[in-house]
Length: 438
Image: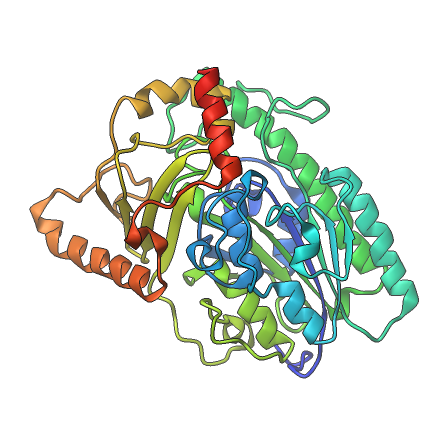
C-alpha cells in the first residue's frame, strides 16, 4: 500500500457508501454468500477485519460515525425516530468538511436525526433510501460532478436502507432456505434459515447498488482523486447480533479504496472503533482534530506512519425500542460486558422479535435473566458461549476489565452513573402503546 502517489496536502473527494444492519456479512469477510461488487472493491482497496461500532443499533452507531464520539457523549443514546437527537452543540462530519472547503451532499439514508438539515449538509436528497433508487440518483450526481470539473472537493454520504428488516420484503432475490448455511452462534432451525435466505436477497440488491456507484466513479474519471469508503452501522438483525455487545453485533465491515493510499487488496487486523473514522478523514484532508473527538486517526496505518495500536475498544447500549443498558470492552483476547438492571438473557430488538428467527429464540432467551457481568475468552471461545465471570481463575481478569469500563464511564461522564436514563417523550408514548397492545 504505497503512498508515493498521494500527498497529505491534497484534498480528495470522499464518497461514503453505507447500509443498514450488515455487520461483516459479506463474501470478502468470509460470509457464505456471493457479493461480487463489494468483494471486488475490497480486492482493489483494503479491508479492516477488527473494526467495531460503538453500539449495535442504528442511530447511536451512526451518531458516532458522524461525531467521533460515544453515544452517551453526543446524546444519541436511542433511535432518532423515537425522539433521540444529537446534542445541540455537536459538530458533525459534514460540518467539519464544510469548514475545510468541501461541498457536502447527503443522498438517501441517514438515521442520525429526524431533521436532516441539523447534520450540516449543504445539499440533501432523502426522497428514498432504497438501494436501487439511491444508486440511480448517486450515479447522476457523480456524473454531474465529473462533467463540472470543479476544483472544490466534494463529500457524498450515500445511504441504503437495505438489508434492514423485514427480510420477506417482495421483489428481492431471496435464496432457498434449505441451501443457506446456519449462523454459527444460533441453532439450525427452519425460521432462522428463512430469515437468512431473505437477508441474502436484500444484501444482493445492496451489493449491486454499491457496485453501480463504484463503477460510475471509475467510468466518470473520478477514481484517482476519490476515497471510496464502504461501511455499515452494526451487525445483522438476527438474535445475538444486533442489539447486543457480542461480536456479531459490534463488528462491522470497513472497506476503503484510493490509488496511492488504500489499494492492492490489503487487510488490516488492528482493533479499531467507528469513532476513529472521523478523525482519520480529518487528518487525511489536513483539517485539525478537535479535542472533544474521542476517536483517534488510523491514517498512519495507511501511510506506514507511526501508529499506536489500540489494545481495546468500548461498546454500549442504552435505549432501543426498550431500555437495555449495558457497557462493554473488547480487547484482542477478551470481551467484558457490564449489564445494568434485570434484563432477559439476550435482548431482541422489536424487528428481530417479530421475525421468524426471533419467534424461535424468544422463549429461550427471555426465560433466563442476564448476569450482571459477562467475560469471554475470544481466543478459545470466539462465539462467546461460555461466560467465565463466575470462575475464580478469571477473577483478576474480570476485575481489570471491569475497572477499565468503570474508568471509561467516569472519564466520559456516562449518565448511567447517575441512575437510569429516562425515555424521550416519544419513546414513553410508544412504550405505553406497546403495553396497551399487549
